[in-house]
Length: 418
Image (cartoon, rainbow, N blue to C red):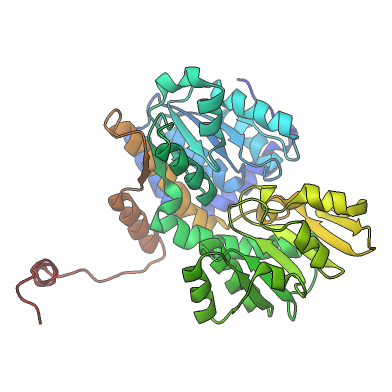
């Protein structure tokens, strides 16, 4: 079995981490039992480009239990947990190509190694597999049934491809499932982003001006947690509806240009590029801390920060101190990459349980619907979304009401009225 991980000696530690995460993933455990009996993915080759974490390890285990032949590579050079990567290779016999801190060249080498698995399904976190297949590995297209995508950034890229008629196979937008973005993006990103900032800096959040660029579900989650920690939260948006919502939620809303003058901590969660740029760096006060919790590090114009600086040094494990030519210091966390995965452990298993249940069931759905779906981006089928919600509630011991036959008739009968 071909693989490329840091050190197989780390495997026992990684296996324990997977067991701990699995304890908090009851929906995925239930699906594993079901897939062990039904084998809905029997013989299907899946190449996955995801954050290599303990939660992802449990997903890979379920897919393999369901009969799939799985290969995994990292979707971010700094998000890999080397011990989990080793455990998947040693104990689960799953090919993994991921090393924390790998350079860009190695990152794409690993993607191509995962694609050499000749997938029938691609499973993406940022659409790098899909992009590579369409641009450099078109020979693989004839075998691919479909794919899934887990991030807002990736879905945006894929919808653009579909609009331009260049998408060559159907994709299910796992990110857009209610059981994904309402919980993973909001509660997961909110908690794990604060966790990453605190682990990287060990600074007190209370009383600081905390500037958040982007008020999607991820931004909402970060704002909620920052306020809970005592920060004075400022939201910067380009969407008037989201900006209005932030105002109604009780946050200060202003342009980033204005916020840069007095912000202490800046977080980008937009999925776009060059959100914080040269002009913002110039206006920031001495000691400003910058981090990204979107997908790619392009949200922060790091080359511009480099050009403005006369000195750069690593002052803590995930903190780089840039001294500008003026003498002012700006601190960049985790090289501008995902702070929650680079400096911390990513989202808690409890929310990833639902996200990865979506990945699992959507992979089975793609197999079932082979050849029937158009080459475009599809939402997660409602029945899958609702099934996952029901399973999660059951695991939490929560019971809900059901509509009576009379209530169902009333909701579909236009004649009865008031």
